[in-house]
Every structure is written in C-alpha cells, then in structure tokens.
Length: 82
Image 1: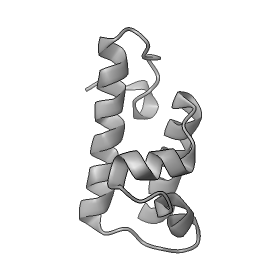
Image 2: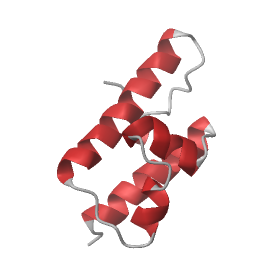
Image 3: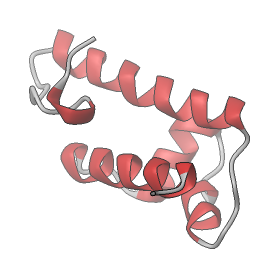
Image 4: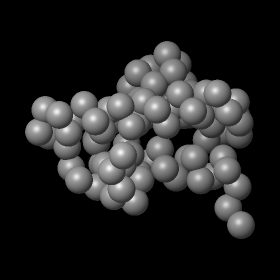
C-alpha cells in the first residue's frame, strides 16, 4: 500500500506536469515556501493542514484556468471535476 506522503507527492508531480509549473514556483504559490517540494522529496512530511492547503491551491488553480478557457479537462485528479 502506498503511503499518504507518496500519494501526495505523486498527485503534485502530475499536477506540475500538466500545468507546466516548476516545483519552486508551486511551493511559493501554494504555501509560500519555494523549498517545500524539495523538502518533501527529501523526507519532510507535511502537516495535514499544509497538505490541505496544497490540494486546495491545485483545485483553485484548476478552476481559475477553467474559467479563463485555458484549462485542460484532465487537470483535476483522475480527470474528475468538482
């Protein structure tokens, strides 16, 4: 069974690939820490509240792209909307 941290990392990596955003830009925009993803990849385990902020950022980013017409329909996890 995959750990929650690995699942989180995989989801974020897929998001970054889809939206073509660098890990440092993502960290800055999502949680105000350009080193966030590098730290997670080196073993840092984000608090649940931080993970929630990151997931909320990804969802809001997807909604924002959808509203301006530039969103790919597969942006949300598994292609689900909502």
